[in-house]
Amino acid sequence: RDVDQVERAISQWVTWYNEERLHSALDYVPPTEDEREWWRQQGATPQSA
Image (cartoon, rainbow, N blue to C red; front, side, top):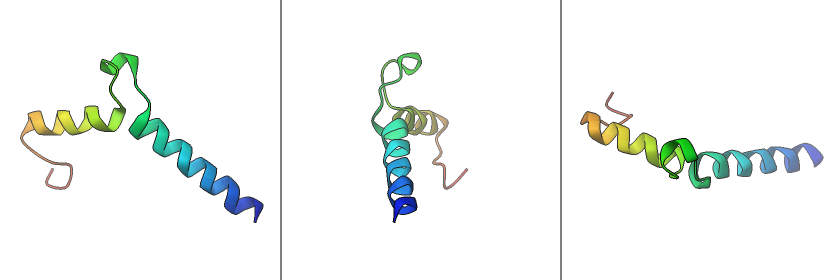
């Protein structure tokens, strides 16, 4: 049970870190949003690259 709680907490933190946290070096957008914009500018998506 304790391992499950730790795994869930880590998963939630990773989600926050990548999808919600505003990153100052990325003009205060979350890393995943910055990556999506990069792929859009490349004319591709991560799946098709």
